[in-house]
Every structure is written in structure tokens, then in C-alpha cells.
Image (cartoon, rainbow, N blue to C red):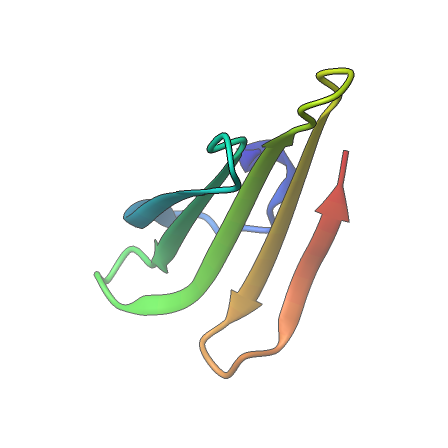
Length: 77
């Protein structure tokens, strides 16, 4: 997931939450803050990992936003 993001040198990810959704808890959703080298929050990331109940096909998505809410990266694989 980290390879899909556009991070500046010195930026780190800090997990802020994790939840599971679906009747069989088949969707994991992680939320991260992007912290710059000065310790300030400069953006956010939402990573979703879904495994289909029928067929067990796995889909992941990641959305990165800056601190004003502009989408920087939105990709699925």
C-alpha cells in the first residue's frame, strides 16, 4: 500500500483507526495520518481491503488526501 502513495522525504504514516464492515467482517478499513518530519499532520490516507464472500476475490483501494481535503492519490488494485 505504501508504494502507491506520494509521500515527501521524511513523511511517515501513523494509524489512527481500524474498523471492519460487512455481514462477515469481510472489509477492513484503516485510516492513517501523514506526519511530516516536523511532526505536523499534512494529510490522510484511507486503505480499504475487501475480500468477496463468493469467490474470495480480494480488492484493495487507497485514497490519499492533503490537509485541505484535495485528493492526491485514488487507486484500486
